[in-house]
Image 1: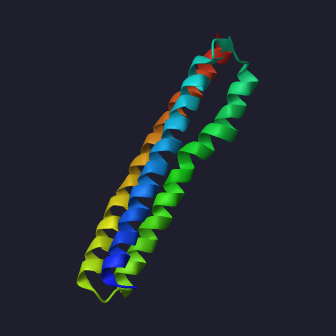
Image 2 (image 1 turned 90 degrees about the horizontal axis):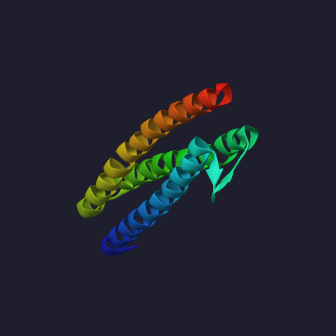
Length: 127
């Protein structure tokens, strides 16, 4: 594969991954709002259902992107290490430099959201 083709492929993977990650995080945030408010399309949902949504829906939507970004960052790092062309190396290392901090940021926000939702669910159970 030519260096130009490799660079185009790396950039295409980055763009597709970012679009996918942003969509998944949007869905996770929508689920978070349902869990926190206890209302879906104007209909109250039970505490049991809210807890089920937290463990089955929200967690997967929030933490899947972390794994995806880490795997992609590692792949970019490996491509950069094995590439002979300096331009391919640069683009690969830049890709790794974008995805790894992104994974960390999404993980931190996910933990923050999780703690908030658990607190809300505990308070709702008492109230």
